[in-house]
Amino acid sequence: MMQLFIPLNFLGFVYREIRGAFANIERMFTLLDKQPLIENSPNATTAPLTLGKVSFEQVCFSYDSRGILDDVSFTIEPGQKVAIVGDSGAGKSTIVKLLFRFYDVVSGAIRIDGQDIRQLSQDTLRQAIAIVPQDTVLFNDTLVENIRYGRPSATDAEIDAAINMAHLGEFIQSLPEGRDTRVGERGLKLSGGEKQRVAIARAILKRSPILVFDEATSSLDSHSEQAILTALKEVAKDHTSLVIAHRLSTVIDADQILVLSKGRVVEVGTHYDLLKKAGLYAKLWRIQQE
Ligand code: ATP
Picture 1 (cartoon, rainbow, N blue to C red):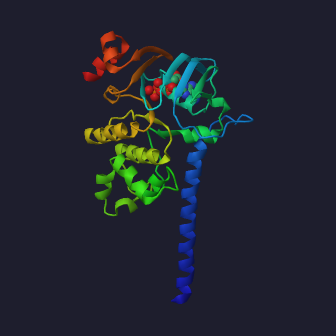
Picture 2 (tube, rainbow, N blue to C red; picture 1 turned 120 degrees about the vertical axis):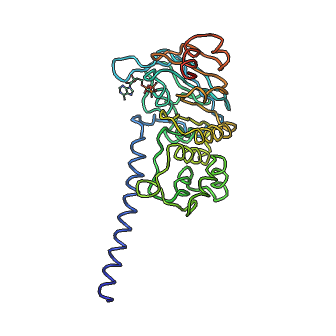
Picture 3 (cartoon, protein in one colour; picture 1 turned 120 degrees about the horizontal axis):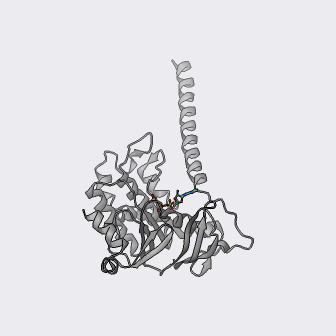
């Protein structure tokens, strides 16, 4: 019996090691997938950015010969919430990709706290921005480890606070194994809204001055959507927020809404300013209300 037990035990060990290695490979690919194509400039600034002021100054950009962004300018003061709305293909996600410096602008400049992002080290830039993407990647690990990924050195108390702020507490309590429930491909499958709240908790832990929220295009059930909106409102108190919005209900409270059309900012204002203008935003609002 012992003769059989030892090899089986060893096989179990090998299996667990391989499974762990795959989880790490997945983690690595996720990171690689997000690596910008851009190199650090020599003498790049490495000091952390703390205020979170974002400015786009006459930014023009094209992926190839086709112009995508044309003379885009806006400023987000520290702590403000700015939303970008516009038709599909208008260039909303491209603005976020440029802010992360996945690509360099063709002309103009993007600054954070007054510094051109081309003069910042990649680490400094990435540390300054936390993103809540449309589709969050969950690793094959427990829920709590997936949240801790936002800042591996976070304490349990900080994780609990992030869970509460992200409105995940009730959901976690409903799981038989609570925060130790395994999630990801080989674990519990979370809904789109639950995954976005995990991403919000990660973003809270990261403690970056700037938060980018890329709203999911697919509609969420109204309970999940409401939980996300409430969580974001709380998080926005401590962050400069840039929201790529598909549902205009998300942007009503924004300090400034940029309406993008074919790569140009065609209207700027608050929700009520823009409704009064009776332009493109008012038209989009009417369509969504119907
Ligand atoms: P949506 O609301 O559908 O997500 P969007 O407003 O975010 O759209 P972008 O994703 O910024 O639009 O795309 C703007 C334009 O740039 C589109 O015409 C798109 O086809 C093009 N585009 C996006 N990514 C690339 C790329 N990597 N290479 C070439 N063209 C691209």
